[in-house]
Image (cartoon, rainbow, N blue to C red; front, side):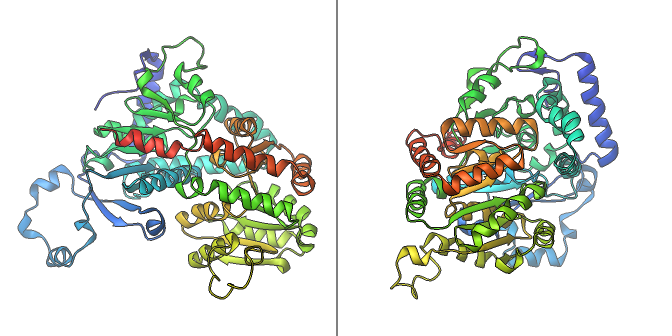
Length: 527
């Protein structure tokens, strides 16, 4: 296994940086163990949640035996149960498609990396490939997952505190996300830690390409010997955190291309050696096929609803750390009078944080009386999404009605799903029928829907809002409640803002700005 912490794109690290990286790895081994000797097996099964929509198969990692144990075992000692399972057609019998297969490597850290992974899987499925889902944070018995889970818990905690404490946000969270993750020295430590994640790839066919939507799966795949790895970088703010040398890095904006290419600001004011030209590719935004292919039709419906005086549909979606509840509360309080007058409709997706919905209902008078809940019922959520588009659920019974009548939606609709796949993909389903997506400028900043950006969580996110405002499909970042309410008023009362964003989205599609997921898949599958 090559040590990638000592030199990064031709830039040697200081001895103190290398020592710190090695110390961090040793600390994690002491805390979480070292399973590099375990012969993990890769098991494939159909994803029960998004398998039907996106053709996704899950990769499960089954604990094998370490080297010493493997030598002492005899095939004759296999249990009758094991033999029966095999003969009955167990999940192990599904084999990797080494010609059409593509692995989407990710981690559950917030919702963003899952959402981007869904976009890649969607594009791959639409292009005739077989996407395999590999979440490195889902193998609870492995050192890999133990390391990632510990980091995820810290990051989620920091995100929630930053939304409540201005001092913490100013002195800790913003600097860490803006400058701390930007440093090349941070990447050196990550590379050493990623060595502990490589064992889960041990029995993955090395010829199947991996598209990673977080840097750790990319780094781990490279350490394990995967031959072709594409590292789909999510952020518009260039940070060394996202480097996985040995992979092909893709980015969504031209601004990000320049910053990553020259490693801008990643070692103070030093002028560093740049990335090789074949290590970095601009692709455009990573967007699901289902969204890209329906851009014109969905935008036309938004424009017509506005022109016809229909209620404006706002989609509020909670972040993966469960933050922003306080901002949501003020938005809902403001919109309730308009909802009662049928001038606004509200979709509220709290992801897998039911406590957020419960808290909102408890503290907002009158909210529950005008709300309909769609809780942990995936078929109901999909039915609602179709009905809101006017092309589904009640087609047989509503033949006599016009499309405008069929898809009239009223009140507040709350969505919560226990399962992470449904919690994330719910927003994608609702996005098509909403008029305005209200979100922090995270991965959703790049999606082809009119967007109202609330206050960011981490300084790096502001650059997503800046990019969106520049290409005309989203607002500026509204950093406080008064400016957020001002923008909502504009959407409700202004005759230009929504139509302008819709026109820009259609124009952006013609320029290929939303084709990033397709291009990432093309790069990965290139022979």
